[in-house]
Amino acid sequence: MKLRPNVLAATALWLLLSPGIGAETASAAQDSKDAGAPLEPIEPRPAAPDFTLSGPHGELYRFSDMRGKPIIVNFWATWCPPCRAEMPSLQRAWEAVEEEGILILAINVGEDAATVREFLAEVPVDFPLPLDTDSEVTQSWPLKGLPTTFVVDPDGRLAYRAEGERDWDDVELLGLVRALQR
Image 1 (cartoon, rainbow, N blue to C red):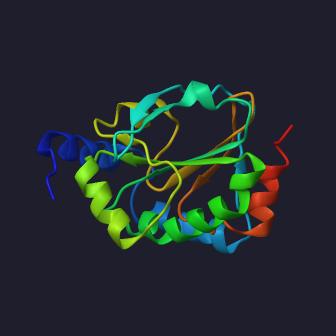
Image 2 (image 1 turned 90 degrees about the vertical axis):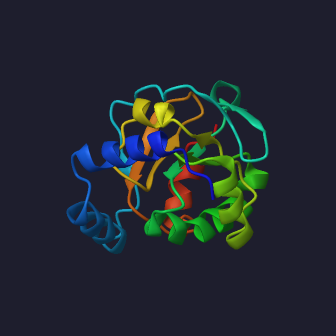
């Protein structure tokens, strides 16, 4: 596994210095998952930051090209245990909504393509995995730690946020996403 030390160090520093990172956030995220509060509404709905990123196999993802559909945008890393734990539920959610025109993206934060490909050998997923190798895109979105997931409405606005691990194939949670469809 080849990691770029400057990117890895910068990402680790960003996560450590961001408010809300640590045991309190993990505990709060678990509490919110257990309490049945799957997604936090974002009001007013600001525009989601645009990006263009490559995937682990050289694919190109332009966020602006995805408008017109609800999009689940997950920020994650392979070294993050809750991120790894929720990937199978994201895959199950993808299998449930792919034919409905709902998109799922899981943006990897600060790691290279080889690291993500190694992860995919262990945990196969077939939804898009853009790579934010320098964490520049991540810093433009309003998140405090990993995993954080946003639901973007068809107009490209942030509708919901989920900090911490979730069961993305949960019927209630997917119902909120489906309700955003035109």
